[in-house]
Image (cartoon, rainbow, N blue to C red; front, top):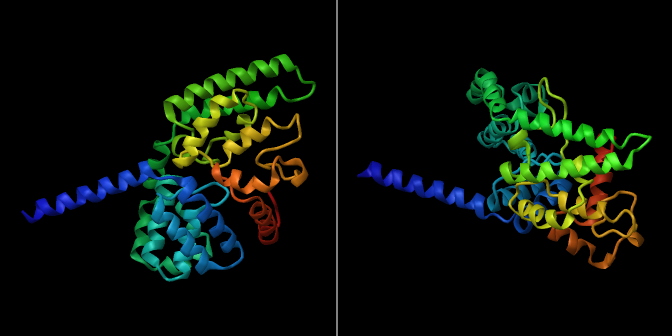
Length: 299
């Protein structure tokens, strides 16, 4: 009888976790918390960053966005605040779901306080197996196809430009990408692996999305995927503003060389940006300054 009760409550927890993932609204309950946490982290306000990230985690299953790495930040801060079990939890997620190698953590002095723990030794022992299992989840065939699509996208933009050929390639890429999204969802890291993989060329799918033309088709699809945390949070703003280049009046202000005079209804900009998963405009500028100050480069 006791065993049945335990199984029943275990089932309820599983259902609750699953529903949390399916019902999560990342636009309303996640992105802004993580954006603010990244700012606090870069400013050295670790306690505030940790609190914001834990609230985001409570609201929605964690992502590990490429330009933020929120799970990695949580792993670091967990060590700093002597929450070692928590740190191992995040390290395991990074290794199993995001392809981080054990050496990545072993070579980072941040994680030195963990090296005498049994969990560390177990991860070290199992690291090759974990990484092999991760690579087994990567759809390499699709990754290779997308890489070739990106190559074609860049090839036809080399001078001298054949505009008819460029149009043909863009239409072909967009048609195929529609099929890919229908079949696999947006090709995130969980589908095609992270930006860099062993023996694989680096891949950024977002590059050729700038050149899609069927914007009204993509807008509701991208917004829904962003809301569910299943696509990069910047793709909606990117595809809309990329189509504004001819007029030089932008909707979301995604380009770093654009100022307030180039943005439609600038007083409502942050409202628009946050509604599609972007951070506030001034915070974006601040982020670039903090990254340049801390790491010596911008993006």
